Image (cartoon, rainbow, N blue to C red; front, side):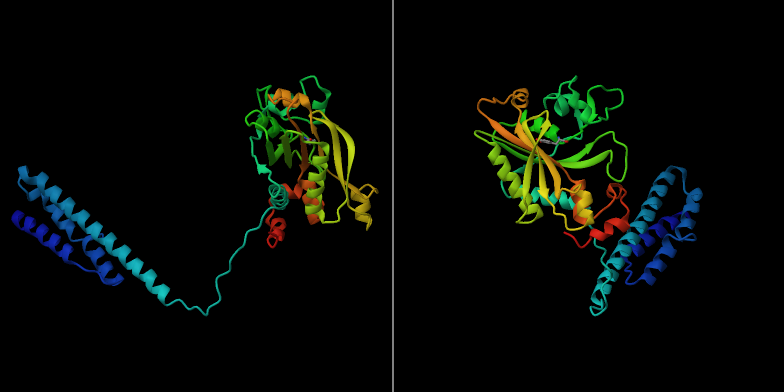
Length: 345
Ligand code: DAH
């Protein structure tokens, strides 16, 4: 019997090597014969007890090889048949049938406004600079002329990281200014979009996280007039060619002089009265000439270089543009809300 078993193995090897499965039915027959629960190899495995002791190992090896040959052959046929099935179904595709629905995603309103602002400034040579949201105290405050005991720190309620007195979530994108100025030589012309954090009570009007875009321009002979002209260009691109702006004196520790820019929104209806507090003017951004102390902190010589900076919030502009009444909607990711922006590019 044992000689017969050896011959049988050879015969099956031969058979498997010469088998062709031309369809799924043939493949299934192959599977049942060689790999199914009652496959023909089982008898050969039980035959092992009749094999001479010194050849048992060789026999077992041979049987295992036979079994893996059957498995490999099965997988090869299976993938070949599936592939030709797929290709066949492609050929018979009915082009006159309606296409399956295509679900178009949508950009978030904050991204829409942010991208628009970036586009406007890129056109006049500003380059995007993105930086970390976890900042240290020096880049966020000290370098920006706001030392530890400075009352201006109270203007921005800060989230400090647990167990740290120096690491914080940046309270404004102005921190990018100090990052860039300490790592690049002037001329510098950057725009820095990003998320910022403040410890504020969440309501319809304010949130503990929001977005800003910062701008910084440092070169020789940069003047307040350059800043005003740049911001006028921005306002007209953003709000229309007839947009009027005004600059009101203000205070920021990192700029001197400092200003806030309003655009004329008008008083056409009741909502305009509410959002402009009855003045027709809407505050859009803070700006100013970079304070010489900031330049010194960042190793730039204020005798050689001057510059201007500005920073604006994105959420309020998005809310105005798309008539959104509650800032929280911008952070809840409710698809019913987000879907409404799918037609906007
Ligand atoms: N960092 C200020 C804020 O968060 C905004 C700002 C004001 C940025 C004046 C500037 C600037 O660059 O010059 O309120």
